[in-house]
Length: 173
Image 1 (tube, rainbow, N blue to C red):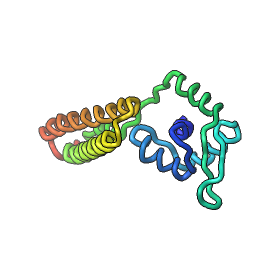
Image 2 (image 1 turned 90 degrees about the horizontal axis):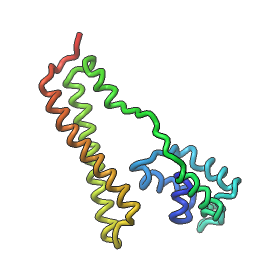
Image 3 (image 1 turned 90 degrees about the vertical axis):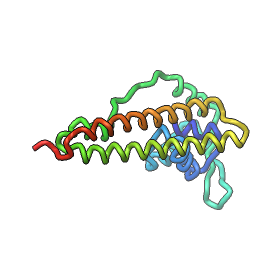
Image 4 (image 1 turned 180 degrees about the vertical axis):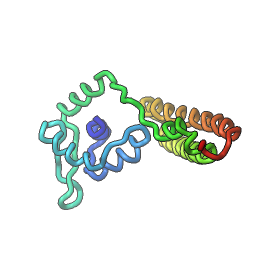
């Protein structure tokens, strides 16, 4: 879905596709880079993408075919299957008695810093796209989600750091 979706925006080489997935979609979707080229080959075999010679010798550009656009629409229309969450930070905090409050505060402070960095990155994206003529409403709602999540993590981290500051620094014996 991510590969077809990225190619629905514009034709791309495999490398450009990899970069777009990392830099743009990577804010909310992760994809293994080792899967991108096999996925392109599979999608080409099924007729969902077409390969054309790229600007450099030996390079290829991939475009979405009409059947690829129909397949993307079908995939996007499927009900969302929610995956069970896997949050390493929350797992560590749940068993925080073993680590102690000082170690837990470091973990939460790091998560807070990452959320602040994401919020700053979203602000740059918003400023850049606004300066370029406005934010596409579909991209805007996605960006807004990221901003809300980052702000929520910041608020949660501040609350959690205050709670952890009242606990003993050393782990339970």
